Image 1 (cartoon, rainbow, N blue to C red):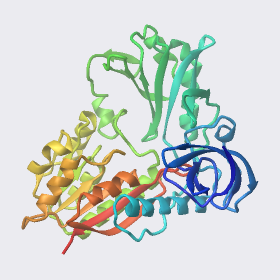
Image 2 (image 1 turned 180 degrees about the vertical axis):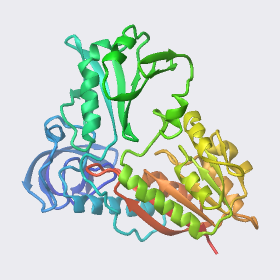
Image 3 (image 1 turned 180 degrees about the horizontal axis):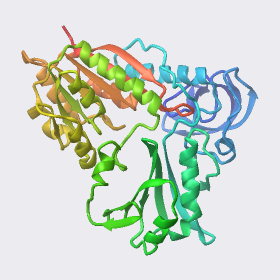
Image 4 (image 1 turned 120 degrees about the horizontal axis):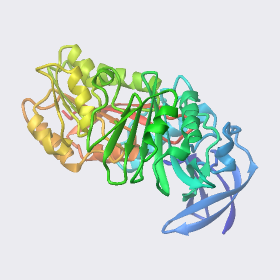
Length: 424
């Protein structure tokens, strides 16, 4: 069906929201205030729209910088057609809406903290690799067809060194592992490039590839059986699990561990978390989903006794090197060990997009009735929906403060710091 509609707002995921004959329709690549002609199909009680043309452009609309955004329907960005202020306002509303709609707790959400840079901020770029025309082609998925991949020529939100690194990888792509498809990531950390290739069963040209690759300090291959092979200083070592050179790891992060892709905003966010925890004057802290331990190490340096919980062995090993007793690292899933790690004066939750396991919320709920229960929880979220869901599972805590961060300009993603304190 085809209709004319006025876009009212931006929903989670980045699509514009409009109403057509009482039906809520979500249409990507539209801006609040746009008058558009769209086609749509009804699915259950909602409509999925597709922009046909803009009849009257909103003053929030700008020209996208990337050639792939409109031309190739790139799924990496969702909001390049909005100005920076409009993007942040949309994200603030997305966070507020999640608390009302999912968390059933209206919360005052302040303006989103902006990123110091809007472009070239990403320190990591992951591409799908397919063998075409006798060469590996690296590309991204289209937003409206996850099976379709277009060849990436540029990526303005990614650091130029990462993009240049990818060009070098693809230049020698004929030497990559044998497979129909591969997945690769180039990451810039501590001024060094690292490459992770996933897929394939054989890599007969590994040494030749290493000899030709310029500017990379680490290369990791995860074969189709899940075995890890690390290439260090042009020397391939292969077995089930190996740590990268210890001297490098003492300062550098593990190449396959999670790390925020916008270092400038990550630094602001980490400082915020540390400040909020210190304001609780804790003697003991649990840092759940601790990653490589940056926040844990900062809190321990200030005198707190920290228990860092992290399930990734490489990240946990890195955190261990930065923490001295009585602080410690527990390499396990949070839901399996949180109860044993308590009591603690303060708790940090920094889960992946899926949020925390329901058992984590149950443990924290039961702890609040204890004399030595947590004085506060600082929850760091990259998904407003799961943040709001988990807050709803913690009815004995109230939301004291919320602060969103624009970790991912040009996209619909938003990072949020939420302070929860016992309900008195």
